[in-house]
Image (tube, rainbow, N blue to C red; front, top):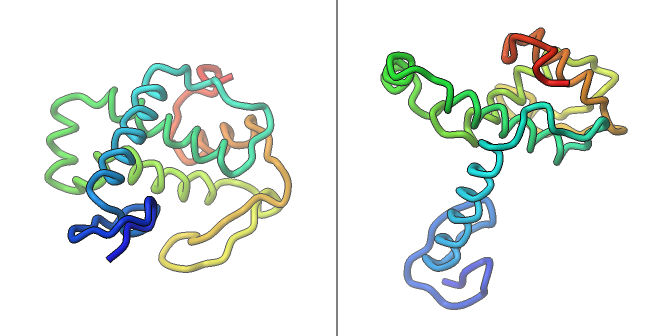
Length: 150
């Protein structure tokens, strides 16, 4: 089979967001993801554009997920490992947070097409204010203090 990223023939393939990729491309994708997680771990949670497109929204919820996981106590981490271990992965937790936040946003601020249990695909008709995202995150109880993120 051919790698979807580099187009070289490969006997071994890994399924990732870019498709089926060879081991070299998979390693590059994992390194890029780990680098982004490290960057977001050190970035202030209130650092975001005043008006967000979907990419900025995803970046912010991933940052929220990374920093939430960093702040977990060993006891809570062990409990999560037993109950729902997938939520210990930043990208999976970020997807969950996306749904919780969208549930608290005005239907005027985003559009969606249900493709599964949660929202499925969503998009913004126009950029949404970061203040609105923070307010929805607060209402969803995924942040506890609006002042820490403005």
